[in-house]
Length: 186
Image 1 (tube, rainbow, N blue to C red):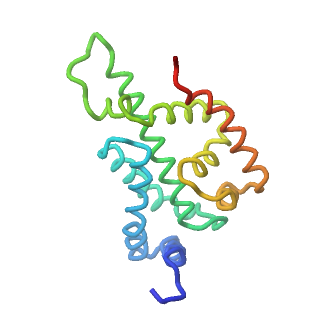
Image 2: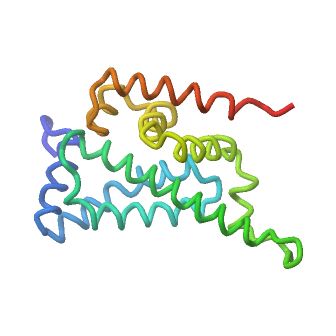
């Protein structure tokens, strides 16, 4: 990498080559983004095996849907969104499995893969995001990108393809919906 080329530029170049069918570029791209994808998934899913499954799903989505990357935002921001969505999707699957597995009539020793979500420290946030997604889905991605991953409003606006003011409004409104759901229940 030259002094004038940033890692983000390299990812964008690799993404273009991979989208054009270059298998070596795709391999290099996936190898480079994997640590970031895994870190994002681990920030949502407390059990390592669940996070690794979500990261693999995210890499598969990146590889198969790279042609949907529009270039509105940086490639790394797009990867961030794909990884966050994969982690939330894995959480929902685990939650459904946990609910089915916790039938008192069939309960045996708990499976750590299904209890990790129940015992996880992010359960309240994931539940709140699930409620928000059901009621106001357009607000979930901006809120997660801002409050969980710390992206700038400008980056989020580029990623979701909405004006900056709309993004700020959606995040504000999403916080108003989510805040009461995160308060401790007395």
